[in-house]
Length: 300
Image (cartoon, rainbow, N blue to C red; front, side, top):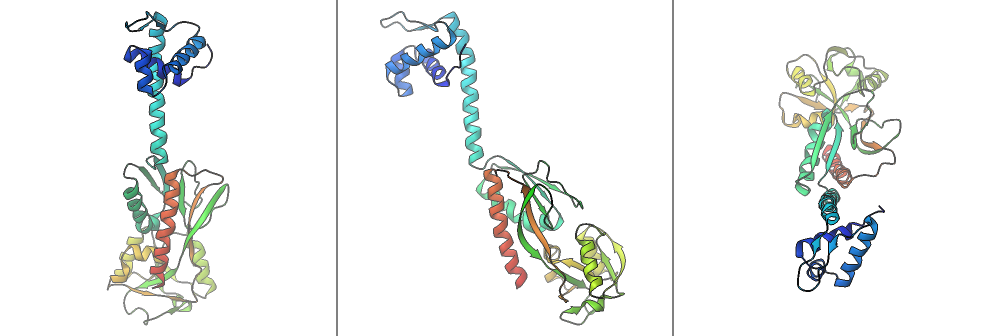
């Protein structure tokens, strides 16, 4: 049997439902001769007759072969309709998107991205995966946020420069910027030496600061709680402080550093050469907008 055209199967199903070629043609928006040609082409493809045509006002009837063909034709037509609907939903942004993230982005950037994405595409399926690996891999993720550009077969877009700031108990340092040398030997709570933390501590050392680290943890809120408790100060990126609402916390004092430490780069990654789904393209667009808003807020 040669390839069967779905149009021919649709014509056959319409004739079976309507009982005549003429009514089927009217339902499909074809001429009766066009429907007859489609059935003739179907019969050539399968090598047999699918309808008995008694003539006159009597309805056409399926042949035994036609009954077999129609049973499978309806399944194929239903599958084709489901495929068409799925493609339409995908193009409209109603599919699934998998996004890799990390703590600061999860707290500050992603909530705004997810909210705006759901406002535009309420039926979308968003899957988020948060890790803090030193050597992340994008794998099957559609997009991956990370705090520096990654090597390998990936492309990236830098969203913003996330400045490092000093957070301390009120009165621990004079108001205004703090010189790096003033941090030499002072108690400090900090992240473990992973991700950008080791680079930041090397930058401190180049500026003459060798603080005494008394506690390490990956939880930004835990670090801030220890600063409030008087365990020591902390050098954290602006996103971490902003996400915790430090600006309005009277128990904490935030200072710029002089000279400034190199900012960490918040980047959005995807596999090189990948064609973005409509959802992924929309996430990139929204993330750029949110990052621009945060950059302006950081400046002020």
